[in-house]
Length: 168
Length: 238
Image (cartoon, rainbow over all chains, first blue to last red; front, side):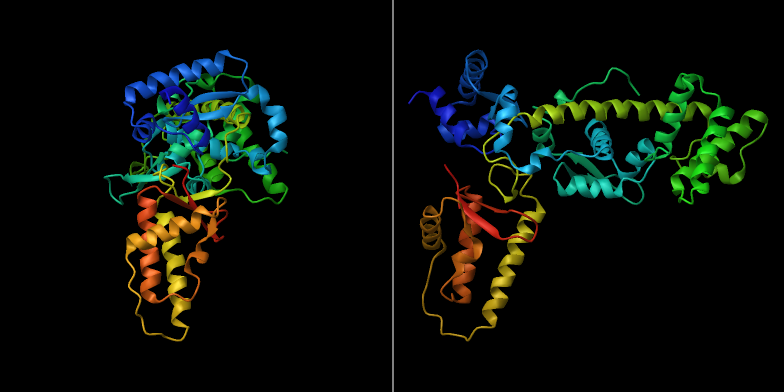
């Protein structure tokens, strides 16, 4: 089978974003060829009358439904899809994503409130992780974002973080 | 009465109400409004969080500095740590930074909403414990869950009558057995099902090693639907 339909099959089965090198490993093709074919596949899905799309997400590729189908597809989905993050969680995540690696105090200085509870939630949901310790007295824990963070917000990588117009 | 998550949120509300630019805030006015709000909270018998009080003290200090420009910082002020605000410029700076991350949060909310309109196969409803292609998902928590399940199995075993152990089983044989068993269960199999028929301690350990090796070779995935839930093992598609 040619590489392109093979990639389509692999993406169909995958349950999470697959990085190009991982797909290359499975298919035995060169990473460059995999990227090339995936891009063609992506364009074909985008251009044609299809309900699916190939997304660049969390440093990988994933087959997903098009947003236009949401109202209908939603009826099949489970309740957890309606769950959204609290404002506090979003602000904290924003600080961690933009300024990483950051400590608890870094977050507290910006938000004016202790972030402990929010950090626990974000750690539990695997949006953030401990990336090390800061080399200052007390060696406070440093936090950074995860691939799950990218996946949840539909971002390809950290360079895709939305840039607000006003700068702090 | 509106509720504010922190002192900055309250300050922002006040500044917006006064319709002034952050860079042109009147410290005396904003301090008075801020204190009035805290006073109201007190009247309603509500607790005022300590962060709000720290900010109140900071505002009062900044205000008095303005009234007495020649005032020198006291000894304990010199010892202040970074999070405390020592000048009006710094307050403005911090407010601007706070506002910046408010807009960041708004952008993230948009991303979240957009992504909620996109569906993938088997979305992240289950908590993946040990998953070959999600290295980050398989953090320390994942392995420790597997280990505690293993400990449980072993301790259950100790309660059983002992037998002479004769059968010799290699890890690679066991791996084949496990894969064969999982092949018949496409939706995954309870972890404990792999340890039926009263296995010997050796057999439990061999099976556990086989599981770890299969996970490492990305042949199977192990996950939990919820914390402390059943461990489910499943053969990977490729």
